Length: 479
Image (cartoon, rainbow, N blue to C red; front, side, top):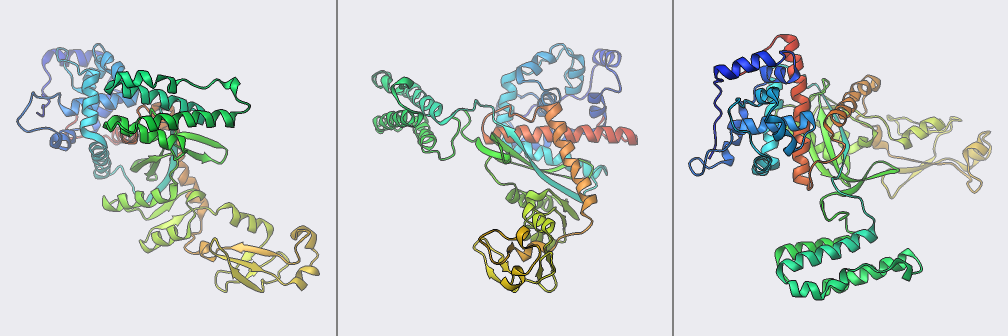
C-alpha cells in the first residue's frame, strides 16, 4: 500500500535543521526550488490501493536514490549516511526520530518502478523545467556516450571455461548427483598440452559441447536460459559476459573497443537533457537519433534546429528532418572532406563534377554502395600536368565516388552550430566526472537504463535549482 509523506516538520526538527544546515548548499537550493511532489502521483499506480502495510513514501525513496547519484554512493552507503547526516535527512524529508529505509527497500523500489517508472519521473522533471521557462528548446543537440559494463572483460577462452562452471552450479540446484558425475567436464584443459591457443580453444569448446549434450534432458528455466547463453557465447553470437548478458562490444572510436552500453542523449542549447535512450554497446547511433527526435515530438518539445557530429551525416536523416521543418547542422564525413582537399567540386544545380584542373567528368556509373562513380576523359588525364599526383600507376583516367544526395538539405553557417554542439560534450564530462556514468552501477539493460535516466535527471535538477536561485524563483512546494 502507498505510504504518504507527512510534510509538516515538528518544532525539534526545524530547530536542528535551521541551526545546522547552510542555506546556500546545493541540496538546500534543490529542495527549495525544485518540486518533487509529482513522484507520489506517478508512483501510485505501482501500489495496491488498500492491501499491505504502508510503504515508505515514494518521494522519500526517490530523494534517497537522487542522493545516491548526486554523491556517488551505493545503496548501503546512502542508508548509512542517512543515520547521522543531518543535511541528507533534511533533503529527504526524514525527521530526527523517523526510521531510515534500508538498502533492500531501495532495491525493491527500483525494481517496482522499473525503466518505465523512472522514465516517467525523468519526463516530469523536463516538463517542470519547461513550465518554469528554464528550457529554451530551439536546439536539439544529439550524441551518444559509452557506459562500460559492470563486469570483468574476458577473452573467448575464459568465457568458455566460465560457462561450464556456471552450468554445473545451476545443475547442482536440481540434481546434485548428476552435477557431481559431470564435474570433470568443468575442469579446464592444461595449456601446456596444446601446441597453440587455437587448438586449446577448440578442445575447450568441444568439452562444452559435450556438457550441453549431457544436459539435454534438463528443462528447468534457469538451466535452459544459461544453456542458451553458453551456446551464444561459444558461437560468438554477441554474449560477452555471463554476469551481464545484455552488454555488447562496441566502439566510440575506431581503435578503442569497449564492453557495455551506449547512452544516446538529446539536450537543448542550455545543457538540459530532454530525451534519453540506452542500448547495448554494438548499436549504431544514427537510428537512435531518430528515436530521440520522436520522443521530443511526442512530448511537445520539437526543436527548430538539430546539431550533431559527423557520425550522423546521413542524407535520408537530413531529408526526414527537413520534411518535419527541423534544420540540421551536421559536418561532412571524411570522404567528402577528402574530395574537397583534393580539389574536386560538385555543382548541386547541374550535377557536374570537376577536377582541380577544371576538367568535367564525362560520365558516371551506379555504384554498389549507392551513389555513382564519376569518371574523366583518358585524353584529358593523359595530358594533365597533375597526372602523376592524381593517378595511380595502373590508372589511365581518374574516377571519383560520390553520393549526390549528401549535398541535399545541408545547412550553412555550421561553425556556430558546432560551438553550440559542444554543450553536450560538456554535459557528458560533467556526468562522468561527478556522477560516475563512465561505468554502469548495475547489470542488465533495464537497470543500466534506470541509472542513466537518474543521472541525467540529477544533472537537470542541479541546473534548474541554480537558474531558479539566480532568478529568485521558488517552487510552490518549496520549503
